[in-house]
Image (cartoon, rainbow, N blue to C red; front, side):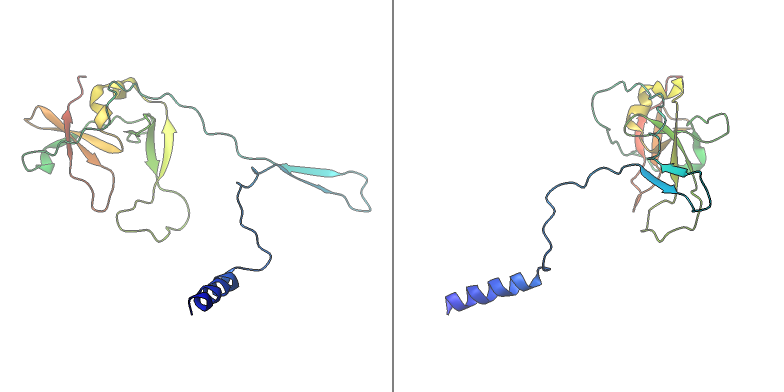
Length: 180
């Protein structure tokens, strides 16, 4: 009875595998440039059209990270009076609010062109545009404020980082205020 079960199970599993397909064990080769050549019988010239991979992203100035430790999370002890918050994120010359990423690159966000795809709750339909970090983002306060808006709190000696998204969004993070 046991031998019959093993043989039947093996045959059943084998029947589920597509015939002639082998399991891919290596990464596919990198994309190559595509070249197409066209010429008609009445033309003596040949038209060559070459398509290449896009150029690498622009290298931008990163901020100077001042601590080796990861992000420290400290939830405020008092309720947040949102009306008393002042945004400290700098803006670029065109007025976009700048943010710091976890890799210390600076960016602003824009709405992508095209229709908004179906997205999970808490997701944001934005595209990051990386720019050179201004010197004011080198302050240690930004070490613990990645992907967030930094706010000063009126009448308090601390600042709050509010995350740009999440489901649910995390609570504000209490950090030291920038020195400048």
